[in-house]
Image (cartoon, rainbow, N blue to C red; front, top):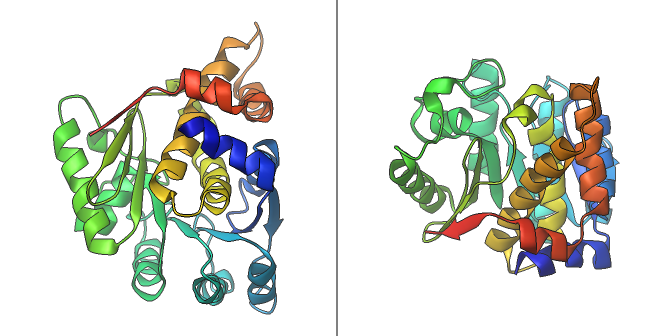
Length: 273
């Protein structure tokens, strides 16, 4: 199942428009290329509608939002909605500031968002105003654990039903939910949290998976999460003495570059609840 989702990306090479944050923009572009798709980065208000029109999907990441890029997110999102293109929202740091939280909620209100991908603190902030975001990272108090798994699955399904969006909640245990079903995914390494931008990279790659797999948004989103986690495992297994987080970042991207559908299918660790 996930094998086909990945192979479709490589077969169709979708073009993805990214309005993403300046900290990780290069890594996002390289991750999209590694999975077999093509990235375009554009955030100027005079450019985004035209760029969105030639792409197959839109990835909106609010990590370094400002008064110039916020209007661009809305213009691009409206154009993508008009064209029926998948739109992914990555609400980076929602809960860390009023501007970030307000912007994420307004995007959800005014645009049709196919997938919201964030950590549990960001999702809890948007769902109930109760997340405890630590900068742009999830607070440890908000972790998805085996002990609270059922509660978090219920939260994801309920918020998916409320928003009409698929929820991809990433962390030690990843959840990808619509209102009826939830993939519980256990791929990944804790060391991935020591690299800036693994979530941003995932959002870009996930958008490519959505574009390449029309009508299978839940499966495509879950396949992207498994692929990223599996790449973290493969990349870590190839670390050498003296390697650090900069090398690990590159090894994760390389693992996606060399990954095929068979490797993903064999290595994916998930259950459907």
